[in-house]
Length: 178
Image (cartoon, rainbow, N blue to C red; front, side):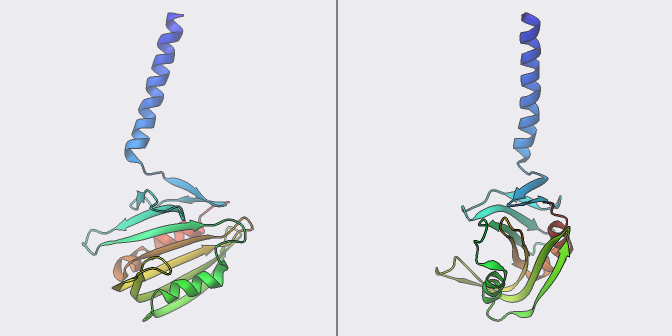
């Protein structure tokens, strides 16, 4: 009985040690949103979501002190969230002086992805609420379509930082697995 107790205690201690290392880090390498599993770029920080609408949130920082960009994942379920066109229009509308705006459709891993890009003055804030104009910003968005509901990913931040993060953003979206 004593050996079993010692082994159980050792196993519990070992399990707690691994759990603590994971909890202290707090940054999962992969995470699920809706129907998709995403791999977080290693240099991007995991952030606890700040609202129930946000299913995951990441932060992209730079070494040149340009600031940081937010990468926010939204998922509303099947048939919810307003659809691809409504979200593209809403995102572009958050940049009233938007330039270099474009959308692009592609397919990766059997999933239709719509990319959205624009830059200019970002009107930060909740829909219908007060807005804060933020100049020299950029949006890089991706909408991954699924019968179980689309996942909407929106990265906003300083234009140069978002531009330099575009390849990592697209890789994260295109390698998402169902």
